[in-house]
Image (cartoon, rainbow, N blue to C red; front, side, top):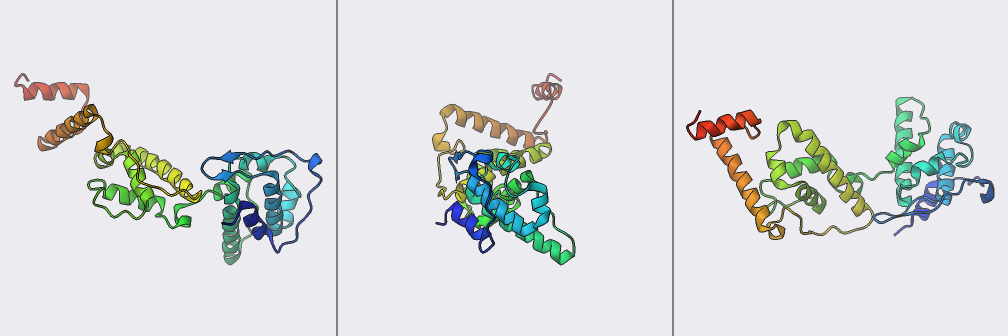
Length: 254
């Protein structure tokens, strides 16, 4: 597999390399390591990145940032970005520059935070469903997850982590919150795939074999209550006063 350093060198080559000032004059950038995605960007990686950005944007980049990361702004923003993802950011910048050229507008260098966002892997980069497609797949098959032929294990794991029951019975007012939770879990799984990890089925709380008898009893009671409420035309969620009124009506004490 191509290393992160080699990927960045390919991004710069065959561009002419500008030699940075001696290391002693520059802000130190220590290498850290991400458990999921390998080593993060080092000073050498930032040097190679500056070379590539300088060639892409010419004087527009050099006049704003110089020949190297003298202020440390780029290193500070990219310190948590895996070095292997920098080439992804450069590829997307090239796509933006080409799109701007086709529209007849001028492309400008990104700010460090914007470039860091471009480095984040998208599911479709790895052949996985997009976030929206994964959400639709999970919600559409929450009633029978074991029978579904999932497009990718990451979709099933994200749905199971959120909870099949929750996906089936979520209140309309909480859909956006639950979807954001699903997206965070799914993106974390995408990052693991990007790092070369093979996702394998694991015992999650939603799997009955891993639940305690108390958990199973509580879920059965909750589902039974929901079914009774639906049969009687009651809302899934009631206030305290509504619940008391319903209880009195059910016992003939209204």
